[in-house]
Length: 114
Image (tube, rainbow, N blue to C red; front, side):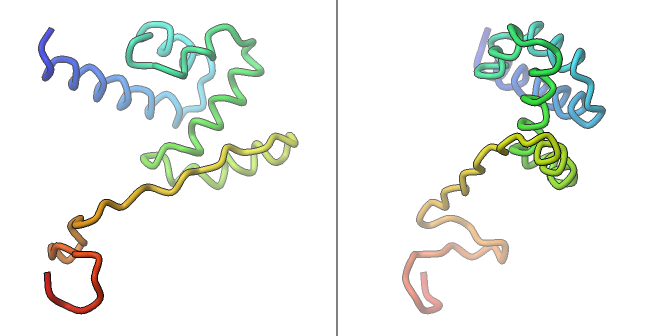
């Protein structure tokens, strides 16, 4: 299996996972993770959980996935309503010299020049 096939596998896994999470289908969530243990990584721990506990993990996953940003408030409220501490969301690291939305490269210095 070459690198491109591996990358496609991960992309397909995450695309399908987002779809399942949008429907809040705990059985589908567990089945998808079980069917793709390599791509699931740390999510594999959900397989040994009851559906009730896996549902909690599912809402936590929704909360940390940027592709599901529109569901974050709902997931946060769902967890809070049940007295469950939401996961801490780590801020994304911004590398020095990244491209800003204007298309200009930043330098980490003040001023306008590169």
